[in-house]
Length: 163
Image (cartoon, rainbow, N blue to C red; front, side, top):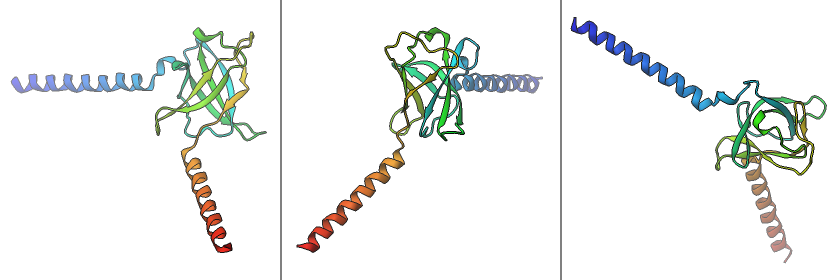
């Protein structure tokens, strides 16, 4: 009889563990603000989105105001088009607001930061954010740095040969 009670106790413990993992998964994914129908969608075009992905945060002054709902390629310009879902609580964002892709920390996840404009018209369902700044890709910066250093050392070597 005692082993049966122990088996039931272990079973309850396992069920609580699975439930805790389930709740933690939804908390970490922050699915509470995605697609709940209480907001609007706008698009923004970027030359390079880096590591931005669907589900990334959209922030305004460091406060999460929405999520990246989807990413696609524009067939005419071949630029990345990010669809942003913004909460209805922030329905007064000026139409000339800008968006830039930022990184949380040096190598952290990427998100979109909004900067407020001064227009009287506001963003609404289907609007497009015209002023955007693409992601800063660390690999590209390192490549440019190495290229510049190599050209400087070649220039210095050529100058020494001419003297």
